[in-house]
Length: 162
Figure 1 (cartoon, rainbow, N blue to C red):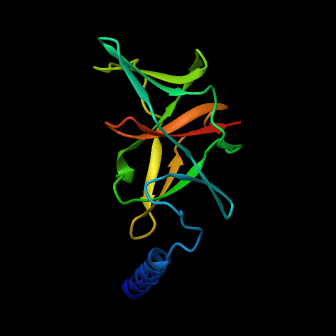
Figure 2: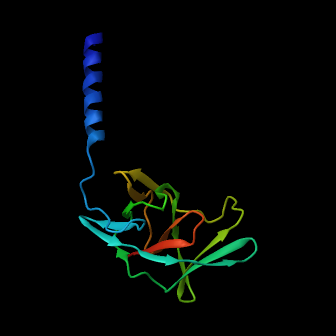
Figure 3: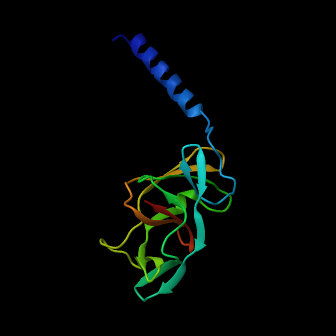
């Protein structure tokens, strides 16, 4: 290829890339700020907002949410969320899987995590608007109870994958 041909291809590629980046989000917008909503096609389903109870056990902390299951359910094994932020920092959200014990949802975290300690499930956070973020699980979730929580907070947004 000649240099002018390569420049032409580079210019066309740059134009397509800038056009794709300029596309604005046109889907549904969450009615409340700082609450993640599950995306089901063009419908948004508000997650169950709660405060996790914290029980310090020395080297571990047990976080629990009352009730054995969330009324907010999704059949999607790789759920997608939308959140419009005011106070919550979307990039600080963490996703955890709960164990069901004693009629409540629990997650046990180690204060000084090592190699085999429970870790948050990987999520991908993308800004799609001024204060609007698209969040999705970066791995397939098994059926069960889950919660999104801002790091360092007992605030939790619960849902169930079935």
